[in-house]
Length: 114
Length: 493
Image 1 (cartoon, rainbow over the protein chains, first blue to last red):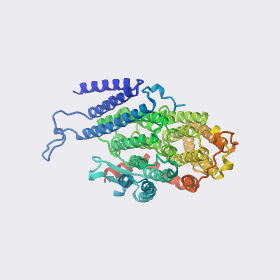
Image 2 (image 1 turned 90 degrees about the vertical axis):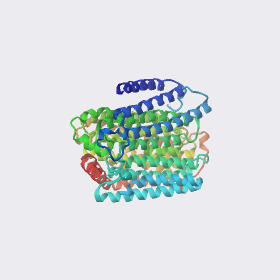
Image 3 (image 1 turned 45 degrees about the vertical axis):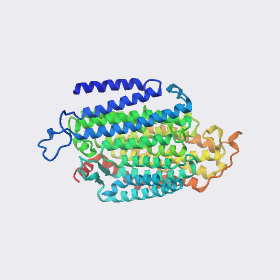
Image 4 (image 1 turned 30 degrees about the vertical axis):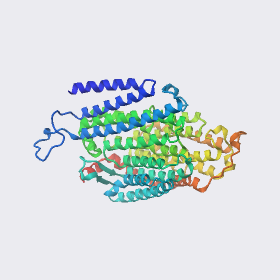
């Protein structure tokens, strides 16, 4: 399972980096979504995945190995929510920008650089 | 102690009040009153520190390292005080410098959520909690930077957003790997584990991710490109706020992480920090010298000054760390002040472009004085704050045998002086060229100049009472380098 997830994280990072290097702003946002999901999976994976064990147990727990670590799940959950918020804001910003300029091309964004 | 949470709770209460009331006048006044309360609370917290040196609060009663811990030490407390001084100044400034359609409760709500994020990152003792506060800062700054909805602002906003989002992804990845390797995210617990571990070098994978994340936040070379592309587009009130606070949160995180727990493998990290510091100083200073838009000069200038703070961290003696802290505080005050004065110049002349304006010394001598204080502070003219900050850093560099970086720091001061003199010559001394901007004859009111007067007075006081500030920063630096007191205070509550 770890191997599979590791490969998936790798693929998501590759796809994300490819997408944020495209010229279109929409594709850039899709790239950000890929990257943030890849990072969420990475956090989840790096803290160790345990199959078939509950994260929350009652008083009768005999040994720590009988439960899954709830912290990485909480971390990833928070990170996913934050990611949602940011993607929504990015899309709104892109919509506003498109309304004002009619362009989706990152190469047109050169006014504020020099 | 419950008071530890107040720097976060006060802005939160203000936000709720503003959402409920929906009245702009009410928001303006509560903004000013609230930031004054924040300042009083921060000073009170600082006084409490003299007893034990630390204030620790375990949120929700979960014992650290299991729950989220809030920790205030001298470094956090100093940053809190300076932040609230800047917040007070900006709250007054916003009163007269936001155009009427921008002056909504929306501005004040996101202004205080930004402050909540900044205070939260100074107070927290938990790595994941720091990530959350960084996101709070990010989202509110996105809204603030695109406040006017003009084309430039949206464009600057997209650039700002793109790089900073990548930065927080790096942060999250580093944090995940760190948790996987150590099983904890509490800073004190991390320090306890990593300081006594002979395999700590394995942490370098996480450390380098944190390094990139904070590098983007702090705008160091070569990760600073979002800053000059976006800071000059926003409303001048917002630019001043960002100039004073945002990059310094990155610097704070650098200082916290690389003194508390990434302390193994010192030769590599300190060399890297010094190289980056040198490049940041020189490239920021040189880029500032080619521009003629006040806000662009000052934006590049922020980058150049970040180099000094990183330099202090790279030398890593108590004096150097104290110098970095001193410099950070001084820079937050003086840098915000230069942006405020740029706004005042804009109010009088109607443009930020230096070639179009001139003759301000006759038109408004008070403004000239208001400009010269932060300008001298930044350039390092005694007896204003910047001189002592630079003196400490350069002395620490020479004491430690780091002659190259000390030499670069001295040279960069000349670049700073050059760009300040350029603004001075073009805007104040030169005769007003014959163009459209010559006509405007607006007068500046006292309320408009008050924020700049407050910050200027703070810069001068910091210079005059430099020995006191020096003592406090030395205490903060010793606390950071010692580390054991931090660990004991947090873990053995």
